[in-house]
Image 1 (cartoon, rainbow, N blue to C red):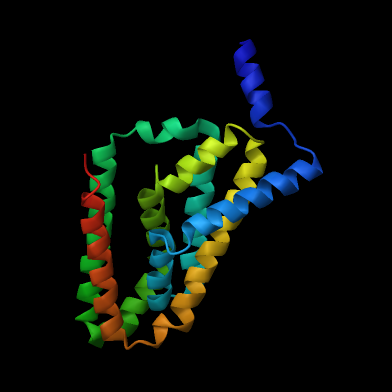
Image 2 (cartoon, rainbow, N blue to C red):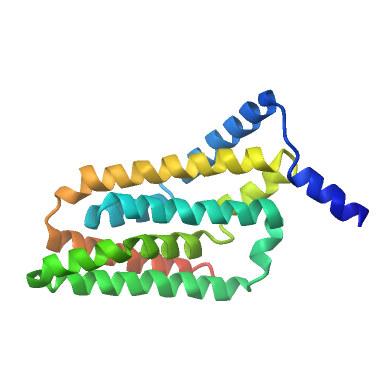
Length: 207
């Protein structure tokens, strides 16, 4: 009982203002640099080039908020709950599914308007699932868990979440400003191939 109380007090301990700035700021910089060019940011770019940016961003942000909460609360042991190979298969299957759907969408340009409306309603869930499963037990989540074990957890969570939100926002802006200029049929093919490549790369991590 004593250990549980101590753990709870440690988890929800309120750091001083100086500690908040120091810990959160350091975490923000470390996690942001680690995520630059990472698959989650590339996924944001690809989705934002095809869909409205707001649901892409908020779906991604929601996934990272939950992932960081799990990392802070449960620590690095979180990823051990599900066997490594099963997680890899789930990630590969999800990327492959989106890859095939995107390629098929590119072949149905005559229904482009209907596809865009349907995607606009469901893209938040799609972005959430892609990021949540792909990043579950990933290096970033484990890094957050490790840092939270040695520093105020709430400050770590805040810094990590802000870093991932900033990284995702950059990915969304790049996708909207640059990738969206690519013709739709070519963009669909490139995006579909990109997701299939991510599926193949995920399978290379099998034990």
